[in-house]
Image 1 (cartoon, rainbow, N blue to C red):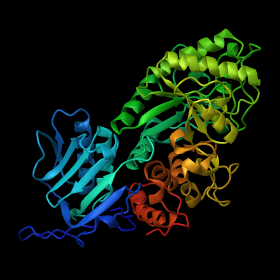
Image 2 (image 1 turned 45 degrees about the horizontal axis):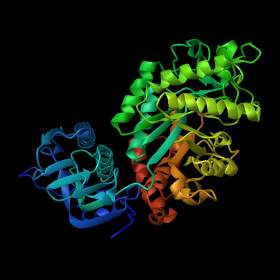
Image 3 (image 1 turned 60 degrees about the vertical axis):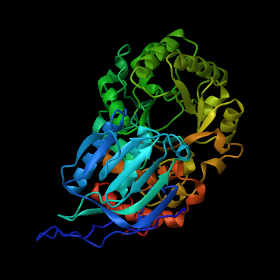
Image 4 (image 1 turned 60 degrees about the horizontal axis):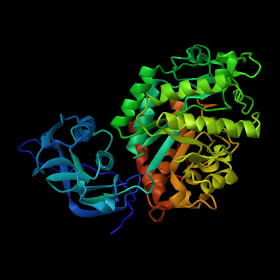
Length: 516
């Protein structure tokens, strides 16, 4: 049966070991009372407890690609929580006790990313058709435990079964590193946030008027000049290709795809300041550190522009194993319509040439999309439905609901409000499949929440705007609409406040959430 979890975290089980009595709290007996986010498809309880101890081993099915890494991830996190040395071992068959991960295609109802988490007194099993599904099952298991145990308190997990699978294949967030630059370690922390809530895409907005953040070896002044500043006139920064590859690898370990965005033909002043020949008049532009939009454009009539785009796409595409390349395309107000369409259609062909699928903001629907194109809805319904009519898929990122740089309310010191205020309930309480008339679930690739950084300068500010909204977007992407409602979600979110504190996340304490 389907049961919506509403409240408290799992405490520790009472266990007597000879004359030594560790600190414990009341034994957990009801798995359905765990505050899972995203809400699983079904949770059933069997009224007992599994205890994590010094003898706990995380086993993984021998010879199964990808599982050893996931087992190591789970063991590391269980060790951090418990203070114990949790080891991993391969196993030819299911053990009698411990934690066991297995890739199995025996349950087609779960799909490729779904999983079944079965918790018994002696054995915890996580089974899925994919390594990614097993990883998501591990995240669910970790949510039954605190971020860190108190003293020598034993860790116990209520017994029962969780069956779970995602509503959408694409569950992502976008981070703008162009307006203000964020370091490799900052991006890795963002990846950790996404992984904890079963999100599987991080879209990096790498270039804009204020900064160029990815090394292009064939055009070195893009970073030397274009990467030298940011909004407000700070020193900016950029990722070397080796650093970017490090980010990609770190994300892969947590089953997250990195999507690079090179925004064009507008939002390109950093490139136009770096190379004069990209301008129609042949004169380099001044660096820009403000936040206005729509004033820049590549010269769409010059062949050097398309050689530039080809070089950039070629070098960046070589760094990413994922299928998508984002070409931007928004707010190119000073590009003539016909020139814009011509440009987008030529750039699409370049992306395809290097083996990637095109994603662009909804304006790109004005061009004729190549096969496999995705239009990212952020503002214009007409553009988006036009894209669907032309055969494109839709990525749902409505600015009025899913832009995490919008203020929570008029008192919020950070952020903007041109798309309206987005309190936590407003960010959560919408359905992608009914958001745009004429766009149904079959047209939708997934959901992406965006954080633009005109006013966001450091990690604490990023965390404040992202949390507590991010878990809600994760749930929209993962959980079926009939299992989601604000009232029960707000109670589960309240329980995650302690997790945010223990992870030292500087989050917004919305008055709409009954924080514990």
